[in-house]
Image 1 (cartoon, rainbow, N blue to C red):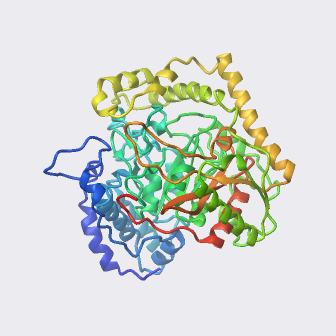
Image 2 (cartoon, rainbow, N blue to C red):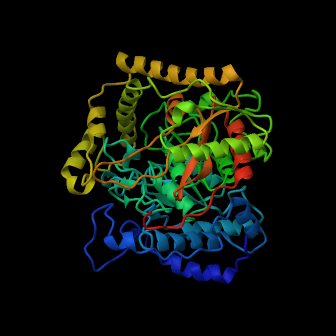
Image 3 (cartoon, one colour):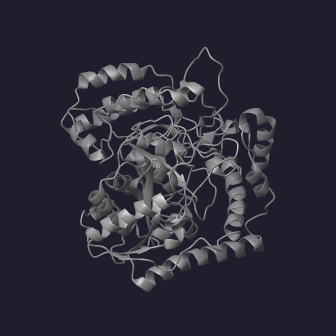
Amino acid sequence: MKTIGRRDFLRQGSVAGGFAAGALACGGPSSQREPLPGELSATALVTPPDVTGSELDEVTVAELQAAMTDGRLTARSVTAHYVSRIEQTNGQGPALRAVLEVNPDVLALAEERDRERAAHRTRGPLHGVPVLLKDNIDTADEMTTTAGSLALEGSVPRRDSEVARRLRAAGAILLGKANLSEWANFRSTRSSSGWSARGGQCRNPYVLDRNPCGSSSGSGVAVSANMTALAIGTETDGSIVCPSSANGIVGIKPTVGLVSRAGIIPISHSQDTAGPMTRTVRDAAVLLTVLSGVDAKDPATTAARGVGAIGDQVSVDADYRVFLDPDGLRGARVGVVRSFFGFHEAVDQVMADALEAMRDAGATVVDPVVGPSSAGLEPDGFEVLLYEFKTGLNDYLATLPTSVGVRSLAELIAFNEEHRDREMPHFGQELFLAAEEKGPLTELAYREASERVRRTARDRIDTSMQAEQLDALLAPTGGPAWVTDLVNGDHFGGGSSRPAAIAGYPNVTVPAGYVSGLPVGLSFFGRAWSEPTLIRLAYAFEQATRVRRPPSFLPTI
């Protein structure tokens, strides 16, 4: 990393200190007509953006800590840099629309971390490091938590989510809230990933007319475009791993129960989880170490309390950095799930090159293995989500301050209809309507569907791995990003997230290659609580291939 003078950063900080977070969503004042949410101007599509690189591009947590320890940087200068970077790229320049709001207290928080460091009271490897949170993760501060919806504008939860609490305790600086697919992409069957009424359409930083994938789109774009050091996403099915793959970064979807969901706007209590989104596997391991742990407010985490030493699986108190072995593929057995291949010949070639790299690194590649496929996981899986979404969202909305105007899914549906011109200019709320028709979780239809689909997904993964004595299964995370389409919605080419998502099992994606300049990720997934193994394999693959390169902000291909 290049040496960076304090004076340069203090100069940047003076610009950032006066930055108005409210300009983020619209890109500031303009003499031209204000576009509809997500609308791209003709100029934006033909004029290459002026994005100046910086000395902090691609910087790692370890490099930041070293620079802050020896005085080359301060938490304030680092934070001011990222605020300035957001100002330059979010609403202007490439207009990424990845960030909804910057924490107005962010520089004061950074100065407090600097005072602690000066007094030799650092809290750990995240001390003074800015982290961006997806806007469905509660923070009890000056920021709102809205899931991208106008219905929750101004909503400030009464208390921090457990994720936010752990980050604060570790000394991290909560930089702001990331744009997302509104309501975590559980509103319409024709949604465009990365679109929210508050933030408009988030854009892929590699090729700006391409989609960032959802629903943790803003988190993925911000990390990839060096708008933040680290970000937190959430996943029900693909919403961490897909935007990580599409934006050329690392994403970890943990075992359900490893990271508390308390204070996170829910879709499904049986599938939801938060997880790290970073530029390197090492940084993801650092972040997961801070996030994981038992929380009495989330019963799913109590299942992790008794996880003991099973092979190289460890308890929730693990420091995941100890599994970062550059030689970690040697002697490993990985199984290729061919049912997730074949949707794009160029993706298959990227995977072929990745498999060859793993063989060269000493892994035994079992190709193919039987299962686990996504076949037969629907319609039960979808029915479960509808039931759990209604119950979970109603419970969450009931906890909000009385000043918030919507207190139930039914009221939210009515709000969207009343504000159709702003909330539904491109797609509707079919999933909301379907969920509202469902009854309580005590209904037999729900209980039977939940049991069937969960047992099937878990059996398929467990059986496949046991039959071949595998350390992990692997498949392409997804295909290259599609052109954003606000009329027809998303155009997923293929993906492999569903079995692990429904099973509640872990999934780690790491950059594997490019198709026409667009990133493609490789997923390692496996049994419950196997994060140590998956991190070891993903890190060794990353070190052997060094695939990631920062985005170029091309207007189009």
